Length: 64
Ligand SMILES: [Zn+2]
Image (tube, rainbow, N blue to C red):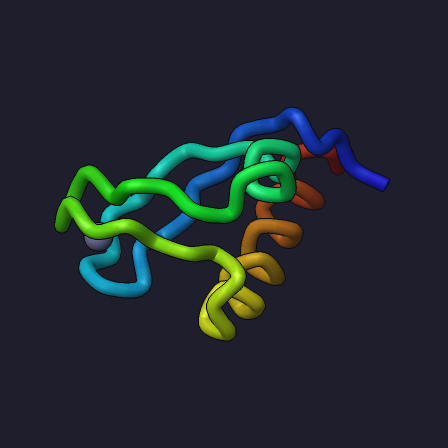
């Protein structure tokens, strides 16, 4: 299992702006404000499932 405190780029589903969040932060608070479009993003939304998969792939590359 990877380190959940590592920050990863989460692309905004609205504007694509990347926000650095750790998986631990996402798990404790899945809503954040995007600085690109100023919208509140809820990472529990279904679109995030793909993003999370991408994030896991990022982490796996980091820890290879
Ligand atoms: Zn945005």
